[in-house]
Length: 527
Image (cartoon, rainbow, N blue to C red):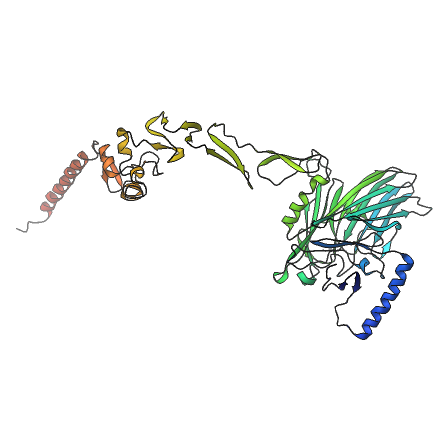
């Protein structure tokens, strides 16, 4: 068993002893020895002892002799612990979830019998349930059964069987509960409510029993709303220490989660169901988080089953994802799920209780491409096979000419997704002289003839400097009838090139003549 450091408990090999966090003394040691002597005697008499499951990330889960995570037997120190967690083996454990401050964890059942409505409690410090099957460990689960029998004025008998399951490497545990009507009359409006006050943010991961509580999912009878419920409680994280977030939820449309302010409202599960409190991320203390199931009517001899999931993580987002990954363990095959793969669609739960989706199609309809999907975002890749081009949503072989421009062809050595200029065609020479084909990235590439004077100007041709011989030089532009003027081009044959200059000079000359003529009339000549 791991060391229960700074939690009011200290672990020793094969034993558990309480520790108050103060320096030991001979007198105190004597008192402890006397205490354990009485405890041992009491254990021999009652035979009741809490059961503990050890894990790796969830360090332990304990179920007390009365079926709660914190039992009522002061003679058994293991009856005084519940659960704690760490995200990695290099991090410290959280505090015990339900132990440090106000000790609250348990369940209640509320039902309406022909003679009236009753609520049976089973929690730390009080219980209306008599143990009929003592707490015991079987494999990787702790089992307990208890029974409530009403008085003569309210004849009703309910049996609760529970199994807490924890696998060593898991970051979650599951409690499965069966509620059976052992009476002779139907029980209507049956509710099962389980809750506790989480205080795990102190000890080695923080200095406060306050927790940040949030409802992440809340289901409804409306079939358009997902059937899952989840509430989280985050503790720790002060001064750079790790956070530990506990999530409590279920995949059951009959369930609702709730964050109540103490004193505990376990005595009215129906009211919790009708008006669950959402803390909306409040940082608060003395708040008990729980989950209530509305089981409806249970006929005599019939049983209603439910489950409660406890899942851990370093933050709420991780907790919700880990929770979702458990969906197929609790819902019927064929129900939708999320396998968290971008390259699958229509994910559903299989009869093998796993979430499986159909492959996402990335087919582009071209025979010359290899179509594939990449994780994690489901990005489609359509790579042309060697020796081909995929241009304009069509396949082309090496050397195929663009049917709309004989100077462009498929050249996979230069580009498999864009047309390349045919450098061997003399009539296309004007498109490549000084461009990026002949010069590469040198003088004719991104230099003077590439992206320089004749590169990104208004007279660019072809593919525009993509390495396909598309950028024309000044000389080639002149051959095509364009006159180079700085960074602009004028058509040499246009009146705006040569004729416009003559007209401009004539216009300027006339203006000057008019100005001089008027000036002579106003002022006498100087000579």
